[in-house]
View 1 (cartoon, rainbow, N blue to C red):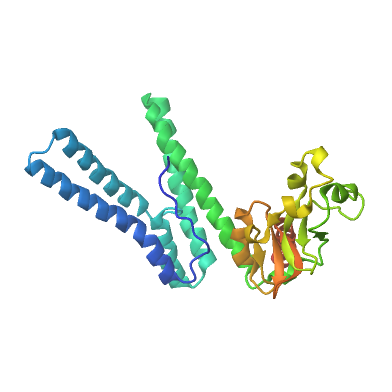
View 2 (spheres, helix red, strand yellow):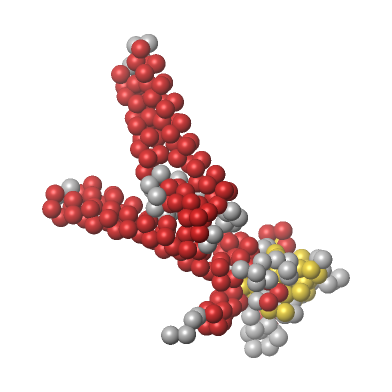
Length: 291
């Protein structure tokens, strides 16, 4: 409803890459706008229906408007990423560049919010709610970009092994659900998610209390953990030496919000968003300048 959004697996590694990623959006819209404009003219020349010409002309106009709007130098618009790439290239500081682009995005967002509500209150134009909604989206997204950039800078160079929980409690794939539940939550199993191991000790999946709760009580004695676990191919995994910054987006997108840490196929730990949050708290406290 609000338009397209670029979904990136990681941040751009350099200003040049950022420039190419950001530039392709407005460029695509501009090319489409020009193509539809040419098609509209051609259809009109050959005597096509006025309704068809109008529809194609509208497509041309809306793509050109989209290209111009997205080129505005304010995050999270593509123009904001272009501004970030330029400032990053000039200063060499990606976080500082992100803060500047995000500040421009918040300024644009607040302008649209105020202008939209002014149109509603003083002009009796209900359509002003639309730019106000888009403006609020820009404010939220720009603020989030700043938060992500500062978080990435804070976690830079930090490997997964430094934040993971070593030697997590595991459960055998052959164990029954009834036997597993009988030992928790005050016995061996005090957590809510557990790596599942095959008889040879190899990790094969992850089981959560939520998955176990879906098993009917009368079937728990005959159902094994392997029957209800999430298989390893569907579980987020990481290497001990992998950067936390690279893992974080995958962790946030995962269903369980946790990852199994594997070293040469052997389970060595588990990492959750809570683990990273604790690391961020400590890093923030130890790196904050004295007041």
